[in-house]
Length: 164
Image (cartoon, rainbow, N blue to C red; front, side):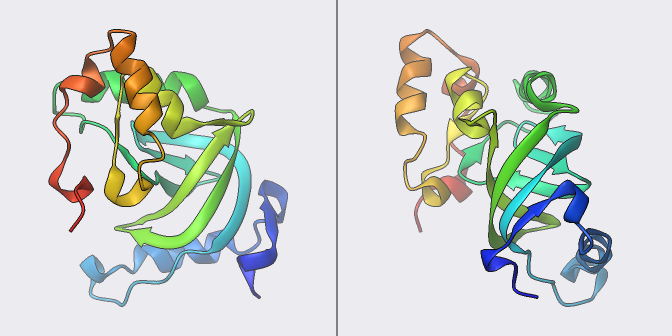
């Protein structure tokens, strides 16, 4: 089945249980990594791991192009809380790009047409990660700075976000 041209809804996620089992067999478990699907995924946010990782219909999704502090870093718990308040239990639409990062599938996700990563950056909870966003959230970062936001602005850009 080619997911590249299919729109996948929560009700049509027949492949999801298999994908979750296959994702569990990552290189950390001594097995080859399984590619993530490519296409649209619409479903309920079932868990918020942190400011840049949510689970949509139990599929771990990493918001592509977003950098947030980890939970134990300054601003990390605030970023997680902000994401949780924004999306927990709500229906989101994610554009999966087929890329995988650790146990998560990379995507740009939307809530009621609003880009979740852009919302986090505008709220001062995150930074644009240019290596993966191609500067998509640069304007949102400028808006946050103009509004006096400090969490994302004081969070140093992680080295993985810099172009190689």
